[in-house]
Length: 414
Ligand SMILES: [Zn+2]
Ligand SMILES: [Zn+2]
Image (cartoon, rainbow, N blue to C red; front, side, top):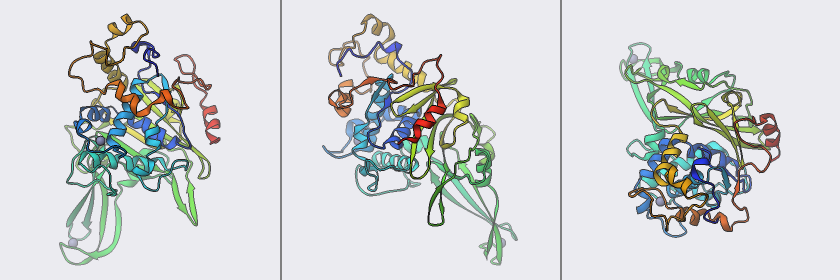
């Protein structure tokens, strides 16, 4: 890409770029879009000193560096489309079973990617250690997504209680027969009666009550709605709509309600799977401010309404604790302001100086120089040249509402 081919910073959208689909990589694109628009993750990746001290050698894949590069590209190239080649060509480094060209499960990809990034944070760059996040390690992934569940067994006779804890990065919820996310959460936390077994308190063989609750609420609450289930010989898909709110109160699902802390969450990203087991397509929606939603369907980016998002058969839902982070639009505005300066960028007319020659870049910034960004993705030399979003039909813009039915129809041919 030529320096100077981007319009002035302050006229470009305040959310990330669209992503080309290489070869059935919609699962990858949908997940990357949600992560790119997770502001605390972006902030922590940028603040991390891993980037300058990474021990990955040439040819080695580091999930943390890859994600940070990708997000930098996405935010820098907003209003454009690029190809996430680095991820696409390293899918098997995230999970050995992943293969470019085959339709993978977006949730499985997300889980593996988060754990790989966590591993990078604690110093494991490559290797086959997987796939859980232990209690004893901390990482930026755990700081953003990490919560904890408590499983409590109570003797129905003497009341003896025993607790076990499990660290979580997301919550998988059964949705068969469920009408809403709240109902699925109620079902997840409902009291179950277990078969009689010996009690550690009274030593009698008695039935016990078991209840799962959240013990520590995460900053970002990620819900996976289990739409794929084993059915006899194969897997089938549950297609029903599961209602989900724009704002969610997690307080009722906590083991010990915390009066001081408010636990209201804002929905900010959604992954949808359209189609069935044989033919399907993933796309996502992201929220860039209180009132702005965008469909991110591979290279197609379109403005849409919250209502349109709420009517989707969601597969994964991303909620963020209210007030814990700015919206991505504010984040991008601040970032551009700090790095380019609105006044400066318009005075420079349409030319974007290369970072090497730009003298007015704020000192002490930890943002990746653009030269590094382009080395990684190298779109200028690729067969899919950088192009503005939405040349392919759906146009974004405040006035024109995207024809989502059509998106759904288009989704089918994949
Ligand atoms: Zn690294
Ligand atoms: Zn007992």
